[in-house]
Image (tube, rainbow, N blue to C red; front, side):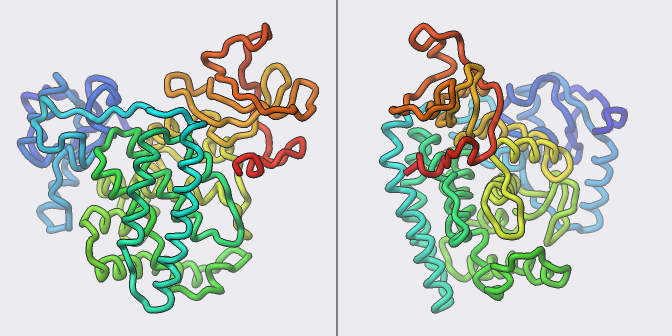
Length: 421
């Protein structure tokens, strides 16, 4: 971000066409999910005036926007609300009363896990049925996906850690099914964190579940190829976006926001994505969310041609992509969802004990809840007790505990997947 190109402007002097690069306060303290947006309507100006005294305008970006508009470049006529958050809990209220929905966990992860396990199993079965029918008769039955997204949303609203924990179960033999379900889980969870309303969560969950349906039109050998794809093969692979759009438009019951989300979930902040080389604010917000969760789940899934990253390694890698592949604010918000030590991580505590992270503490991401597997001498415990590193400051008179480091999957012979079942 070139701060020299940004000029401080009183919100009373704002005009449509200006590009707001920064606010006069942390963007996390406002209803705007991500900073960086164009002013397109008077409503946008009024919304900014309600929350800020002044903003920083990038006039070079503003001139580009005016040029794009005059030359007829295709742009969505979206307000700030639509660009930065698309929907709040009360999308039809005025700017002065609009707020994000704040969701609180209503059930501990231990109680939600049995319910989530059933939902997760049924979701994988539903996606397998949907894709099988699609391959057989070429018809996309969207209702199958809609029926399973509903209980997924409800489980995430009660406690997202349960389904996230189950989404860590990865298999080589059915990547597409599990990736569709896991991406949907991450998308719903990300939307929950951002305070989107339930209807938006349903759209995100459905869009993430279906954004790769076009791959059923690709050669099977291409999808399972163990080596890296050639340039020509990548060109063929990228056609799956158009195939997905054609299937969704022909199926009915799909909103325009889902279509835009699927169309642009491979676009990247720096313009290096596809199919339209969109960049920065040209990418719809739902597509930014979908692209983030698609990438995260992919790099934490076992695939023949790609090195599997641990959840901790994936977080570090994605963080390095901020302001290049992904908008910095999108990455930072997603990091709050995943946590510094993501759910499912194998960790070693300062005491020498080994544990698995099972739930996050939103107020202190460095102090999650963990399940103890090995004692300080690296011996398997007869019973796997859970410890909240934030609130259980002393366990049986022991010293305070914290996470010393993340461990590789399989360290000390521990397979976290065994413990999810």
